[in-house]
Length: 180
Image 1: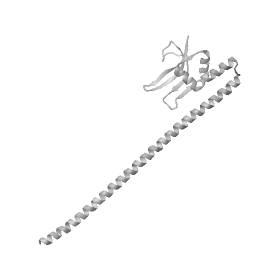
Image 2: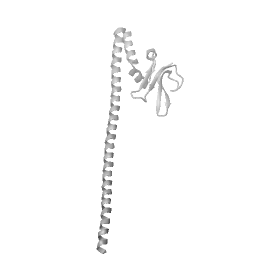
Image 3: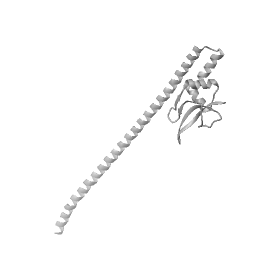
Image 4: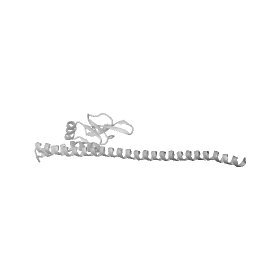
């Protein structure tokens, strides 16, 4: 039986969530599987990956072939690196302690990359929020200035009408005196 490590699609339309499974290669994509290894959610940024590291490593060491996407996920989580190092130990290139040391160094480097990406995303969100608030403040100030100008114009018109209405009775009185 040819065993594959692949993804099963779940979730609603446009919002998939994948289950990482070890399954017979002849079975349908979302069909029966041998063992559930983890979950992959590409909807978050960065993507959320939960995987049973030991079981995934065991399946890869037994010869299970991951699909392209599953291979990328396993590489991202370090399963493929660990497999590579364990094969080096089997061949006698180095001992198991050296393999663990190299793997830990690789995992620390990977963790710093992931944390820097998360920090960058957080910083970008905060900057976008600050820009939006600044743009809103500018619009509010221009709106207040326009309202103040409109109020001043309305006041000027009202005082001009008052002056015109005060002058009108004076002119009427003067014209009545001339006529009379």
